[in-house]
Length: 316
Image 1 (spheres, rainbow, N blue to C red):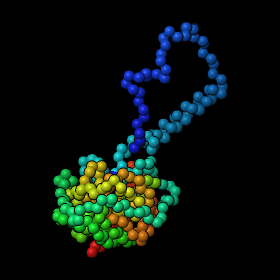
Image 2 (image 1 turned 90 degrees about the vertical axis):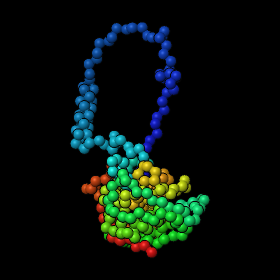
Image 3 (image 1 turned 90 degrees about the horizontal axis):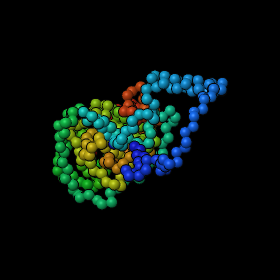
Image 4 (image 1 turned 45 degrees about the vertical axis):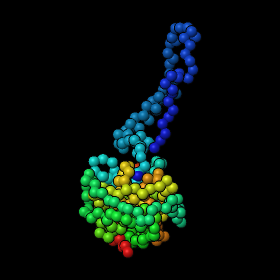
């Protein structure tokens, strides 16, 4: 599925546009121009060499396109969906420059503390799910049930994948309606046979994104769910969260698994945690890196070299 820079200072409208006031009465008197000096041999060599460097840069530009520092930066951090005509689940975008790593991936190990609400939710909480007619249905599925949902307790879930099993603990106290949605999709077999389409190992965004039946970040269930976020949200190692577009309440089926350093704004619903065995699986996938032969979204993330295909999701 939420994927920066500060503007420079600008002069005041009524202030001076020069570093100091202009004083016409102090202009120097006109002097006849001096004849041009001849270039020394060293200066000629320097000029010719500089022109050669410029020509080489132009040729490199034409051969490989814009270098990274000339590309237009992604204006928003998002873990969810690609903007455009069709809903695209783009994931969280880091607040640092991203690139495909050419060195071993550095992972923190252990696990980060899970976020918690300072004020508990009402228990039960009423959930409602609305069809999204503007979103293409990649895989037909029934809407989750509307109505009251408990906002306390946890639910164990296991993702059977081609890379190894990943155990999850869904936390109703964090996001009761998101838990209802995930369980509904899993019990209808929505995730069976889908591939995790986006891996990011860049410092500031280390996660694996899954849940798209299309496999390119554009798929969804044909409905959206409400965000269940709060200011204290963090996304440390071991967190399970929902992907979405840059728009609020735009999540659906895509989720991401955080295995390392991830610094994104608290705009993505956290609804559970990953067990130690699952983190070990994610570490192996992360060390395999991003597959450069497959298209990414331009921020250094893309399909993992080690495929991660969900074969089945086991729920209570």
